[in-house]
Image (cartoon, rainbow, N blue to C red; front, side):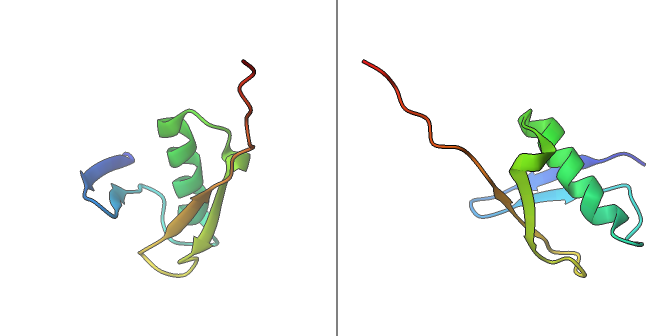
Length: 69
């Protein structure tokens, strides 16, 4: 079984994660998969809700960037 995005709606991205929900393995895999899909470092992703639930909320942490004229 592999990780995959199964649906995207206005408020959610529904994913299927291959890791078992044991010892935080699925949570780590969610972060790893989101990082790979978005091509951002895993350190920029934080699991903020759902550590013990099938439904999870992640936050993307970014730095402020300025554009010089």
